[in-house]
Amino acid sequence: MFQLISNVFILPYNYRTNDYFCIVQMISIMATVNFLYRSSKEKANLILRLLFRYQDNDYVFGASTKCEVTREYWTKQHKLKRVSEISIKNKQTEINNDLNKIENHILKAFAKVNPETITKNWLQLQIENYYNPPKKEKALPENIIHYIDFYIDYRKNEISEASRKKFNVIKHKLERFQAYRREPILIHGINDKFKTEFVNYLVKEGYSQNTMHRELVFIKTFCKHARFMGLETHPQLDGLSLERAKTEKIYLTEDEIELLNNIEPTKLSDSLANARDWLIISCYTGQRVSDFMRFKSNMIRYEDGKPLIDFTQVKTGKVMTLPLHRKVLEILEKRNGQFPYPISDQKYNDYIKLVAFEAGLKQKVKGGKAITTKTGNKVIGKSGKLVDESKTRKETGVYEKWELVSSHIGRRSFATNFYGKIPTSLLIAATGHSTEHQFLQYIGKSDSEKAKQLADYF
Image (cartoon, rainbow, N blue to C red; front, side, top):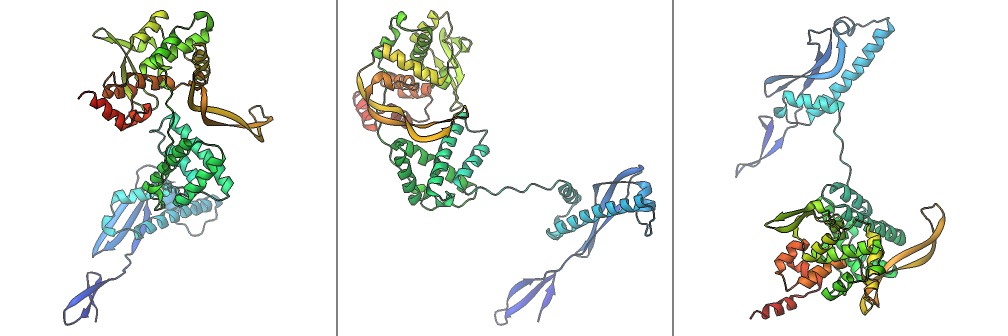
C-alpha cells in the first residue's frame, strides 16, 4: 500500500521494524508563457510572462524581451486569422517564430530547475542567455603538444617571453618525436615507457643528458597542470626522473677579469671594447644579459653617498636594487658617466669570445661547446630557397677557455668569486636566486663544501 505525503511516496518494507524507504514521485509542474505589450510608447519590446503553480501557490514573473513591435501591430494585426496583405502575414510569421523560440527556451530552462529558485532575475537571465548563449568551454587537449599551446595561453600573464620560447622549443622536439614514433603523445600516456622512448630518441639526435633532464621536467610540469585542470595522468608520472650530468662551471677569475681590463686599446675595435666593458660590468653585478644590457645612467641613484641601480629582472620579475662596484664605476667614469651601448645577445656572445682570445685566455679546460653540423637534409631557408639543414648540439670536450666564454659567464663569475667573501644571503639577494641550494648548484658548490667553510670558523 502507498501513502502520498508532500509528493513523496513512503513504502514500508519491514513491517516488524517499521523501517521505510522513499520513492520520489516525478510530478511535472505545468508552466505557461505568454507575451504582453506593456508600454505607453508607440513602439516597444514585448514583455514575457511566466506563470506556474507550485505547492498550491500561483507564481507570475515577467521580464523584457528584445522582440520589438508597434502598439498598432500587436493590438490590431498580430492575432488576425485571415490576412490578405502579404506584409502583415510575413510580419506575423516572423514574430511568431521568434516568440515560439523564446517560449521553448524558457520552458526548457524551467524544466531543469527547482521552482523554488525561480525569480524575476532568473527569468531575465534566461532571456539574456537566449540572445547571447553562454560559450561552451572547449574540451582540454589531451595531446601533450596541443596542451603546451593551451598552457602558454592559460598562463600568458604569468610567464616571461623567455619561458614561452623554452616551452615552444620542447613542443617542437615533441612534434618531431611524435612524427618519428608515428603515434600521438597523449597526456595519460606519459609514463616510464614514454620516458625511455623519448630519451632514446634524444640520444639518437645528439642531445646532452642535461637537455634531456630539462625537457622531462618541462613535460612533467605540463602534465601536472593538466591534472590540476581535470585531465587524467598516468600513475607513474610523479616518479619519472632523469639524473643531471655534472658539468664544468666555467667562470673568469679575478686575475682573468683584470687581463680583460688591461687589453691594449689598439687590439680592440670600438665594438669589441664596448662588449668587453659589458662583460666586466656583468662580472661585478651578477646579472643576466637580459638585465644588464638594459642598464642606463638614469637608473642610478645615490643613498648615503653610495651609488645604487634599480631595475626589474626580466626572467623573474623581481625588483632589484644593487650597489655598484668600484670596477663598474671606473667604466662609467671612462665613458663620461654612461653605460656601454646595448647590442644583441648574439653579437655579445660572438664579441666576448674574441675579447677573451685577445686577453690570452687560451689555457685548455673541459667544458661544453655548441657545435653546428649538417644533417644532410634540404630545407627551405629564409630566402625561400633550398638550403642544407643544420643542427646545433652542445658537445663536451677540452677547449681553449676563450671558446667557452658566453653571456652567462659574468653572472657565474660574480657568484663564484664573491662566494665565501660576502655572506651567501647577500649574494643570493644580488643574483636573484630563489634558494641557497639553487645558488650553490649554480656555482658548483656541494653541501660538504659548505660544511668545510663552516669548519673554518671553529
